[in-house]
Image 1 (tube, rainbow, N blue to C red):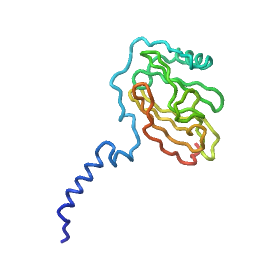
Image 2: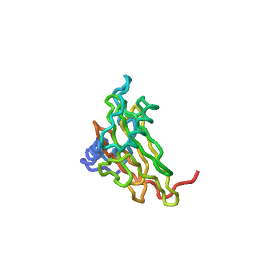
Image 3: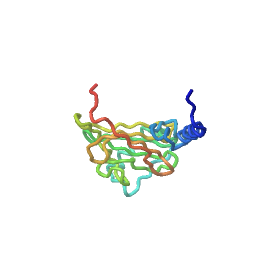
Image 4: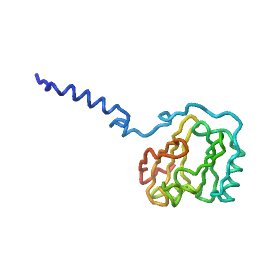
Length: 186
């Protein structure tokens, strides 16, 4: 009969415990999920009008006001309205309005600027190697602070799935996962 050295069971238990800790090996391979970043409340009072600052171009300001007039109820992170509008083919723009304060926020990633402090509402396109470019894919929920976008970074070639967390008044990139080089055609 083969027996293990005495320290082995203790090392095994320690290894399992470390892998289960937040940030441990088990956590690092799993992609962020909406339920991992819940909100504690949903804003249901009278929504504030969007505050359009001087950094927002007139054309974008009009689009934000018009889109917000149709969608005043939160649809992201308990109190925000994510609105998007077309700007061509393919071209998609996005803004986020805080229904409690009226503050307007830029998307977490933009065409040309990528992740470098976006100051534009233009989203990057999503292009797979054999596809023509099309609009990015956005995923978000009212009950979560997680925002997922599938797109190319800035104007680069490789597509990714980006996982962002809305923290306070800013976006935090949680993870960036490469998308397959080709896509199955439906």
